[in-house]
Structure formats: C-alpha cells, structure tokens
Amino acid sequence: MIDIRGLTKRFGETTVIDGVDLRIAHGERVVVIGPSGTGKSTLLRCLNFLDRPQAGQISIGDLTLDAARASRAQILALRRRTAFVFQNYALFANRTAKENIMEALVTVQKQPRAEAEARALAVLAETGLSDKADSYPAALSGGQQQRVGIGRAMALHADLMLFDEPTSALDPEWVGEVLDLMRRVAARRQTMLIVTHEMQFAREIADRILFMHSGRIVESGPPEQIFGAPKDERLQRFLSRVG
Ligand code: ADP
Ligand code: MG
Image 1 (cartoon, rainbow, N blue to C red):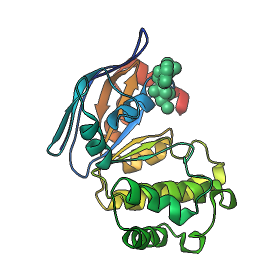
Image 2 (image 1 turned 180 degrees about the vertical axis):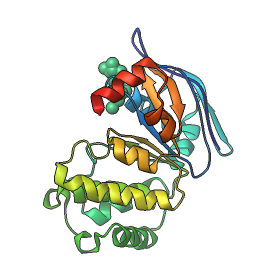
Image 3 (image 1 turned 180 degrees about the horizontal axis):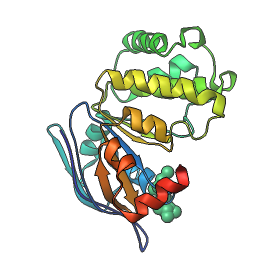
C-alpha cells in the first residue's frame, strides 16, 4: 500500500538517506530505531516532502511521486495522505487546542469550519482533552500538548501517520499518557511509521522494526527477531547501549 523505492536525500555532499527501499502494508505498525544522526528524522520528513528527496519514488495508494520531478500538486496530494507528529509538538502558540486541530482541516482539507470544529471536538474527546478545547498550548502540560499534536494528526484521517520521537522531549511523567494514546491509535489498525527510543513500547506495538544506520535500513524484522536474535553487529552494539 505504501511503496518507497530508492529514496535518496543529500545535504550538500553528505548522503543522509542512501537509496532506501521500504514497503508498508495497510494497517502495519513499523518502528524505526537507530543511533542519532543516522537519518531517521530525515526519512520521515522526506515521506511528506518536509525535506525534498533528490531521487526515488514514493507511492501511497494510487498516488505515485517521482522525487526528482514531483509537482506542487502531487506534493500537496502526498501531504493530504500523511500526518506528522513532531518531537516538539509544533503547535501554534496563539491558537487553542481545538483551533490547532482545526487548522489543517480548514486550510489543507478545505473543510467547512463547522465540520472541522465538530471533528476537532470529537478528537479532543478521544484524546481525553475535551476540557482543554479552549486552552492555549502554554496552559497545557507537555503530555497534553503532545496529545493535541497526535489528535491533530488523527483528525486528518491520513493513510500514513508519521511519528518522530513523540515522547523524547517530554518529562518522564508525561511519557506514559502519550504512549497510551499511540496504543489506542494503533489498535484501530492505523498505518504508522514511528521513530522512537522507547524500546519496550517498540517491542509491544511494532509489527516490524527497522534498524537504520548511516542512511540505510541494515536490518528489519519482527520485534522478537530484532531484540532476541539481532544479526548485524551494529544493531547488537546499539541494543547493548540502549539496553
Ligand atoms: P536522526 O533523526 O537519525 O538523529 P537526522 O535525520 O536528524 O538523524 O540527521 C541525519 C543527518 O543529516 C545528520 O548528520 C544531520 O546533521 C544531517 N541533517 C539533517 N538535517 C539537515 C539539514 N537541514 N541540513 C544539513 N544537514 C542535515
Ligand atoms: Mg531524529
């Protein structure tokens, strides 16, 4: 359902994503692990053209983009099929929780305001934040802000949800509630590609784990295999460090 071929991203002389091939089935939960600086964020960002790849092909459903030739209309179409959850939430500080969720529904999806508002309120109820609908981000805890960030992504009903270390900016006390919300999203068979350092969570939620190193996926498999019988020496070293 999602088919990525030969994805390549360079910053200047440095190749950060080095010809990545990846297929993700509908409803699959894929977790990406690997050392920092290895291209995990860039891979996610390339999948909705927050970073523009120089080469490769991305297909989601019946939409196929050639990275080198993608038109503005194709990029917008790709963005409509993906939703991104950022490490630092990336909420608009001058908009309430409800307005943050409505924003893309109105501006990108062109929904009438009343419809967008109804959907935002429904999502706030699902994320347990109904009483925070009219609160601004500064009045919310880190965990609540990230739940709004996830709610905003949920509201888009995207084919693919991308999570880039959604709990790594949080104080430890807020991590659990964010992971719980992600478990609920996963339980709906939402297709998810998640970068995380929460290994216990990865083990529990992933259908498949990808280990990235130097811009390549060097090992992939079900969690039992990746954690129980890692083959690549770099993966073995990584796992012994993150414990
Ligand atoms: P990870 O998420 O695995 O920690 P990143 O994808 O953030 O890794 O970064 C991979 C490499 O690409 C790093 O060496 C980083 O310095 C480089 N990089 C990321 N973004 C940019 C950018 N906008 N300009 C130049 N180099 C970048
Ligand atoms: Mg990163």
